[in-house]
Image 1 (cartoon, rainbow, N blue to C red):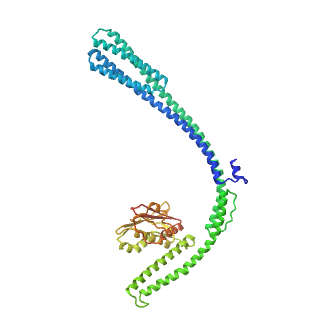
Image 2 (image 1 turned 90 degrees about the vertical axis):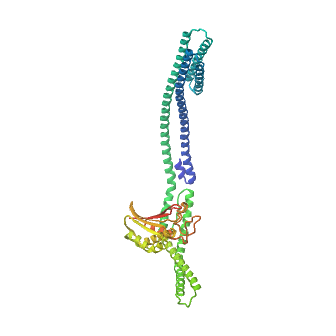
Length: 489
C-alpha cells in the first residue's frame, strides 16, 4: 500500500509525508516495545524490592533470636542474684525485642509472614507476663512454684524460637520463589523483545528501502549531472519523476547550470582583466618607483625617498595579492598547470629551510628538522615548495622571539606526512575550520592582528588537494599550532 502511494501519479507524496508515514509506523512499534519494557521493569522492581525486604526480615530474625536469648540470660541471672540492675537490663532487652518485632511487622508483605509475627508477639507477651509475675514473688520474698515457672517460660521461649525459625525458612522460600519469578519474567521479556526487535528491524528495512529508493533514484541522476558540471559541462535539462521537493530542486538545478555558464564566461573575462589591466600597470608603478629611488629621475630628498619606499612596498603587496588571486582562481577552476614527477620530499624541505633561515635568525628562532624517512612521491616540486614556504613563513610569523619551529617528515599507511609545528599563540578551536578559506584569518582576543591577505592557506589547500592529499591543523590556544599535510606515496 505504501509503495502504491509513493508511486501513484495522481497523489504525489512529498519527502516529509513519506518520512512521516515510515517514522510513525516505526514509532508505534517502538512505543509498544517501550510500554512493555516499562511494565516488565516495574514488575522486576517490585519483585526485587520484596526480595530485599525478605532478606532484611531474615536478618531481623537473627537479631530477634539473639535479643530473646539476652532476655532469658538477664531473667535467669535476676532470679538467682535478685539484682535490680539485671532486671533493668532484662526490661531493656524486652523493649528492643518489641521494637524489632514492630519493624518486622511493618515490613512484612505476605500473610504467612504476618501470621508468624503475630504468634511471636503473643508468645513473647506470655513470656514477659510470666517473668513479671515471678519478679513480684521474688521482690515480695514470697515462696512460689519456681520449677513450674521455669517450665512454662522455657516452653514459651522455645515456641518463640520455633516461630522465628519458621520465619527464616519462610523468608528463604520466598526469596527462592521470587528469584525464579525474576528469571521467568526476564526470559519472557527477552523472547518478546527479540521478536519485536526483529519485526521492527524488518519493517524498518522495508520502509527505508521504499522511501530511500523513491528519493535516491532522482538524486543519483542529479549527482551524475553534477559530475558533468564539475568537468565543465554546464548543460542540464533535468525532468525527473520524483517527489515535489526534488522536482523543485531539479528546476533550481537547471537554473543554476544556466547561471554557471554565465559565471564561467565572466570568470574568463576576469582572468583577462586581472592579467592585463592590473598586473601590468602595477609592475610599471613598481619599476618607476625603483628608478626614482635609484636617483635616475633626478635628485630625491630623504622625505621623498621614504614616501617612494612606502609606494614600492605597497606596490609589491598589490602585485603579490594579484598574483595570489590569479593563482588561487586558476587552482579553484582546475586550470592551473601541474608537472608531476617522482621526487623526494627531504631535499625540498632542506631547500626551504635554507631559504628562510635568515628570517628565522633575525627573530632568534631555531628551526628543528626531524626527517625519519624520505619517500618518493608524485608531485609538482615547485607547487610543493610553495606549500612549504607558506607554512614555514606562517610559523616564523607567529612564533615569538627566541621560539622554536619543528618540521617533520615521515611515511605511514601509504602516505608521506609533513608537519610544521610552531610556538605561537595557537588557534581557537572554532576557527580551525575556517583558516583554509580564502580571505579568512584566525583572530584571538587580546592578540594583535598579523598582516596578511588570507590567501596563503587557501592556496596550500588547493595545491595539496590537487595532489590527492589532505591538509589540516592541530592547535590549542596558548600551545602553538601544528599544520600537517599528506601526499600519497
